[in-house]
Image (cartoon, rainbow, N blue to C red):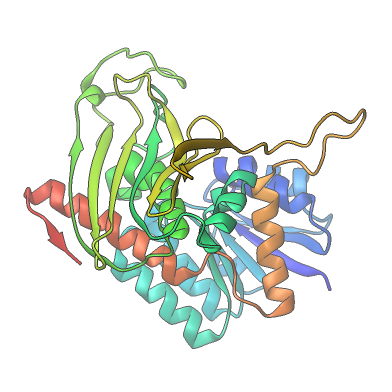
Length: 356
């Protein structure tokens, strides 16, 4: 079977993640590209599309085509309307993270998927890393016992994305919390297999964003256009009493940087992803730390399977469509991530805990 695929949004995430991954996947034909800037759609067609691929600036025109799958790779504010339209046009949908700006929008996306019978997944590719897959197997096997507290890490020292609409609150819904904190939270909830939050409390900071001519991986930002937080901290209490500490930043005065990582503490053992993957615990009265070797290596001319989470994510979704199974990233799980992030932003705005 060959899947006819349409791409809505031909910017950074399309070219940096989805298009290179899809180009390596057998049975996928990229036949349509849409972007508000036609030059970007045309370039994506040249680089990745079939010879007769179509290009558009209006997504509604793209959805008139006979497609199988649509990738929604646009700013957060348009995820819900584009995804719902693509589902109702008869397509399966891969939507980039976060699922939506609000939980109401995310619920509407799930309703559309259920109504149309089409598959919907969200782009949390960090689940498909080798260390994530291994650790999830450990958690699923009960080797950590009950995971009752955890930390979700998404800390950059100075790496503010200064292009596109990343700094625009109206388009994105927030800054590092909704951009990279969402990955760390998704990983943590997935490892814990706990999607029942009770309440959240948190704060969002606009501190370093006011700095002019700041050192930054992608050049200085404009403080006048920096309308989202530069860092945010949240504390989540689950219905069963488990707790999660969520930290996120694009710019903060800390050397303790780590992104899309989780630390888990269970009744039998704990796990840490921050300096390579390790599992720690107690055995026969002695404490232990077990470092997990994730690379096979040591063989000339062979590097092993490699760790390509973007490709693994794409392959997994298309296999779920072909075999009619559930995608690894279920939209109901992504909804909970959105609910928690929304709650932290609301808590930051009101200074009060938010019950979910």
